[in-house]
Image: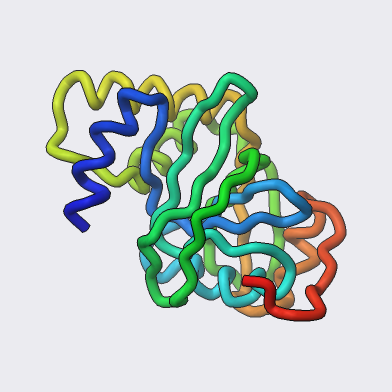
Length: 177
């Protein structure tokens, strides 16, 4: 949308960026799920909304603060009509891959991670200054935030693989989203 395109330039000046992602707060920590369209961001949002607080399933802001990286929900949701103005420390990022088995594995290939993050960045009218700031930010994220490849079957059997990274998830008694 045009608002996020315009704000992308402002965010770069404030050590932040928009990522095409699903964002969820689990156990008071923020997690981003990124991947190509159809990779399962909205599916995971539907599953994880029963275990934590949804930010949105389409566009989230990542911003560096003095105490570290935080994710921020936005008003821009995708298939799941949930969008909340919440924030949490960014604990890790999951790159989604459809598979026949559920598994999360640490991804340490900085070049591949940076490529994935660049592909999921919402871009304004790109200027050299924006590119430099955003590339520096994404490179820093790549080096300082754990990234996992999450291979999953696009159903709730993925929960144990996510719990290996996030810790035990407790199903909420009520839908607090």
